[in-house]
Length: 305
Image (cartoon, rainbow, N blue to C red; front, side):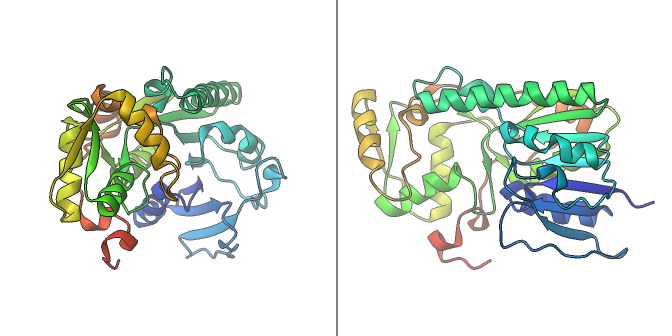
């Protein structure tokens, strides 16, 4: 019997790794995305992946292409705070296990000085709470995976943002010594954890932190990004008042408008998370942080994929 999995957010960064990984593992995949360029495809018994276009949340999402198809297992890569909009769809598809992707930002941004970051943490908390309450009321097995800094495929907003700054300005600004610890996790390792969470009998009604294998300082992390860009290391260390002013100026440049002072102020804070539970229940075994050219956007490096 072939297992069927639904993937919400199939064209996201994690989805780009997850969908072929599921297909290679023998799953039949119903891949859902709100991107308009994804056309509905009529699958056959031999078709491992069928892409379906979702409407905007709240716009008939309970009728979003399920066509009375039973899809018992799901991975939801959409932001947790929009997931409740699709509860009717998951119910209609007779979901029995749902793996949802959260973020350790639920912890790291809750006390940020940036109000938007605090709001993100609150939306994550609310999304987790709604998801758990719905799943348990519906007798659906739930799993939440909370990755740390995800990187890879040239699509992340963490490592790629640093590389973009280095390649544009030829240096990188640091707040003080920038000794806060980090655990970047590769997108393929996150996707592997999603596959394991669909299948593990131990992973039931539990949230897992998903972090990289290596703890390294923020400065060391930036050093390794310098190495992959091929640029010589150049840093400018700034006090917090100057850094805040510099961030305000940086946000005037296209491509850097999402930068916040909170990002800088965390450079000296440890943002590390034990993933022992994920190793025990999911066999999670992430890689160390050694980014490659393929982990940066091709537009930055001239490297074709």
